[in-house]
Amino acid sequence: MTLSATSPLIRKLCHANLIDEPDFKERLRRRSAQYRSMPEFLVAEKLIEQDALASFCFRSFSLPFFDLDHFDISTIPSDLITEKLMRKHHIIPLAKKGRTAFVATADPTDYQALEDFAFNCGCQTEPVVVECFKLLDTLEKIFEQAGDNLDITDLDVKEFGDLELDESDEFSDDETPEKDDAPIIVYINKILMDAIRKGASDLHFEPYEKMYRIRFRIDGMLHEVARPPVSLATRMSARLKVMSKLDIAEKRLPQDGRIKLKITKKKSIDFRVSTLPTLWGEKLVMRILDSSSAMLGIEVLGYEKEQQAQYLKALKQPQGMILVTGPTGSGKTVSLYTGLNILNTEQTNISTAEDPVEINLPGINQVHINTKAGLDFPTALRSFLRQDPDVVMVGEIRDLETAEVAIKAAQTGHLVLSTLHTNSAPETLTRLSNMGVPTYNTASTVTLVIAQRLARRLCNQCKEPEDLPDIELRKQGFSTAQIPTMTLFKAKGCDHCTNGYKGRVGIYQVMPISDQMAKIIMADGNAIEIAEQAQQENIMDLRQAAVLKAAHGLTSLSEINRVTKAHQQNEA
Image 1 (cartoon, helix red, strand yellow):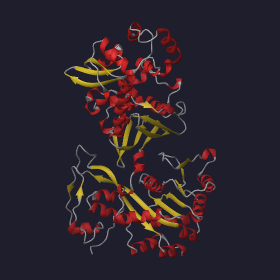
Image 2: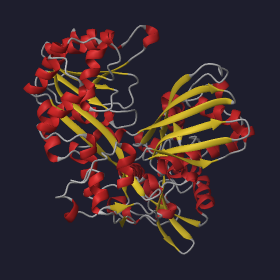
Image 3: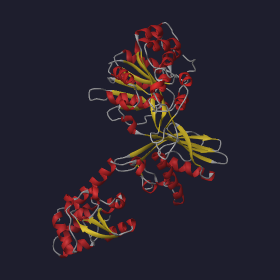
Image 4: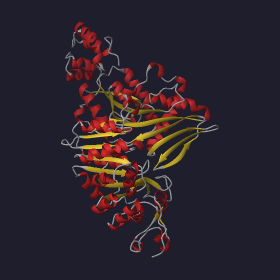
């Protein structure tokens, strides 16, 4: 909104001798850039009191007056709430009667604002005079409440089309999309919106010789969602690269970038973008970074009570090493972040080295590994040890050098958390030995190993019982005591889920390192011997933990067979 000395409101105020015209024009020349509306300018510059201005407006224009102190914002008609227009013109829809909307405004002479609102909402408008700063305060309350109560599933693609990039991600002049690309922009926005609404974790944009495919990974499984014309492949990849602030001209080398899209004033969605040159063009994969998953409480991750107690006990230790293992996409990062959030207090100095840093954790010093610049895991860890840390998290132990520095940190009074890529908890210990870590270091340092998988959770709306013979259930690993008291369920599928599943549940093997296990490690015992000792100590392996989830009705037998290896055993 441009402030103007020729405003009808100003002319009336000057004619009524309520403001001094020369003084007004001088202040307007010096200070107008600070204000968004004429009433705000007049009141802030103390040219007139806001109650006097409101009184003048409703008397001069024969309009109703309303005190916003007595307004319940929950009564605003939902079909009239348009944040973009309300913020732009400083207006609030108060009520609707038939095809007439009663609109609060501090400047009833701002006819453009009323016309814009009427055009966009498809109704006539009747202005109601309110005090300007009360109007501004009420606007903030409306959208603060809307941001707190936002449900992603309630957004539609029209709203999403108005999303803005984060201020740090604005386009430069030479990157601004052409008008001809508007359909591509709308289409990309719709794809991103659909992915968020469906709870996807990744988006895959894949070019081939005769087709272009878009797939979402939902609950760990890829689903094809669209096949746009292959001729659009180049324009779609260019649009995504512009949003990610990547080099559009570079198509021969992989690139990595990020997108931060603001949905409301308080809510934003982060995407990590990776490009890869393939035979028929650039494949792009976008990872949706859900910051809320990093703030989950340990009680909702799916640990059994005893497993949860063992993890919390290890986190309370002043030193030692906690290792989390599993394949890519098994939830290791969420388990580590959950532990870090438990430890994150004013009295604790926590530093993390991650490649890449996916989610920002306030209060924790996070370092993004940059190998090209010489900042690798060992370098970061050595720097941590010179900065008085209490807790150190290493994104992944990939080599002997990283392992040695992490173990040194754990042996010198620090709690170290990290990940490895192995199939089970016992294999994690032998993996360290295979890297070249001395067995006495492993035995004296590692306090807890967590192996984990993520299984799709059955939809509570449509899951149905599954009857299987007892002999088959015993082959699958169910105990004779479990079978009579449990009910297995299978997936069916409905409008509330994806192929009978909605969400995921964690499956864990939580293995504290006992004195007996330490002796086996020191004696160069293999993973089988360690696993046998774990069974003697009543530590569930991944398959047993998965069977328990199925017995509780959380997931299906076919799903646990997909994520864990079935024990084919003879009938007892």
